[in-house]
Image (tube, rainbow, N blue to C red; front, side):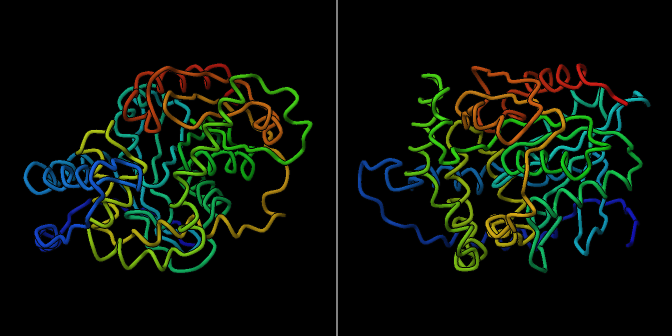
Length: 365
């Protein structure tokens, strides 16, 4: 296995930006039933506003420079290119953390926590295999389990004997799995969701609180109204690809369903740009397909490393009864009245404080 780690710098050719500008100018807009809002999906007026900003107010080069201000690297693990930011703390004895994003996010999710967290931690922030500069994937099998094994190898290459794992969205699947596959080195796992669902055993429901039942109702609503992306990614990612790889507005509309109007346009567009400019819109969706095809034996048994959960308002509501079935050592469970799904971006100080408190309570060696 090649252990080489090479410095990396983003330098998007101007021709790619010019091509994007031309494509945006030639958008063929869909119709919409007047007054239907979000009932049928992402509304045209919302996407039009984003595209107008994309054409007249958005500056990719500024965001490119922002990313390039941090040390970036590329390595190959298990036949796959892995791109990552590596920001060292001024404290030489600091614990290292590996932070994993999800879809339709990217490493941009974590830019606002680099400052507060790097005071006390070394930070490794990779793109998931198949996402942005870590893509596209070229073979089957890049699910959460294979990704976790790749992360363990990445941390070994960087020389970290003990480290913690942070996750949001898909990262909240990968990070606990990393704790499972590298339990001798992972101090603890901190996530913003614990995706544990009813098993079908009626006994599980006996201890549910009224708040838990409300969370179940919210989960049912999400499943019935917002899970189309999950079904399509898990079953037909290649069929979707012709729309989101050829049309930047198609990609934006598809991603906007899980970003929403509370996020500022630059954040939404920069995440979309990382998929568009790297041609990884399709390979990113394949993560869902690969995860849906996981062998049951590969996912058997609860995790045993310490886990901390920080739940934020407006995001998935985890239910502890189900979570404790899947994770034996939940040592911190905290809810916040702000933040949303992209808490690292929207509430960086709150998330950083929770991360710091979680790891401070754990043995480091």
